[in-house]
Length: 359
Image 1 (cartoon, one colour):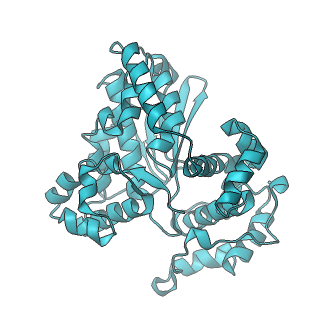
Image 2 (cartoon, rainbow, N blue to C red; image 1 turned 120 degrees about the vertical axis):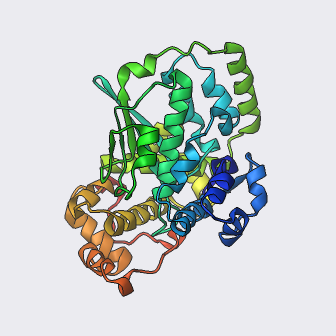
């Protein structure tokens, strides 16, 4: 069950590809996308194909910051009706709240969390790859680059984040990162996020237009009926958000989404899923990413996946992958031992895996 993203996420792809010596049409066809998607911004396309396109483009061009180059000239209007709605809010806080609410219309595999801490705000972006071993570096950098561009359009081009953090390692050339984010860019961090001053949230938007807000709101309501896929995407994103808390249950997810657990159960059953199997799928994808593609300790990985004890994580990992996380990490150092990608949909919960109550 593939998550979808608006084709507008590929805005500027053709220009950056050609500047990098790539044939954009060929690159798109190679990942199973019709080149015509570049002219259909409202079309919903598979996130995993976008991820593979961006990664292949970065690899073949030798430009580790390929996707970030695409973000440099992004506009709020590229977000369609959602961009119109957030553009005319009175404050950045209002804009971010609405972006969180309507994010599913833009990207079904991304979660946005705005965490206020004393005088600081952390805007955290979490992305699901869709398949095990599917690199997310390019998608993450595109997402954070677009967010910084959006904030500048809302509260002024002079705005600078206090910090921009990435989970992945730094590229050899940081010039594009410094050009877009400033010099406070950090890598190998716990989360992908933008850190700014809390006072930024209440910065007034002098161009706010209430009439345009009403128009955009009606437009969104007319094109965004609640669908089964939208509900499933909401559940997936909420699981992703709540897992590190160690309290991810169907009751907590229901509370977060403002629906009763029975509604979630019914929608999942209609799609041949259960809450436990969906959470297991997400855990399995994240486990692969954290174990194989990061330097986190296995204790940290266990916590991020919502396990209260490393031993519980170890038993679950063994049941899912047939070996220990330590052995998996040792094998990945050998060129011939990298595991074959496993579609997330093939994951099945182990009877030995902890239940929601144990999280």
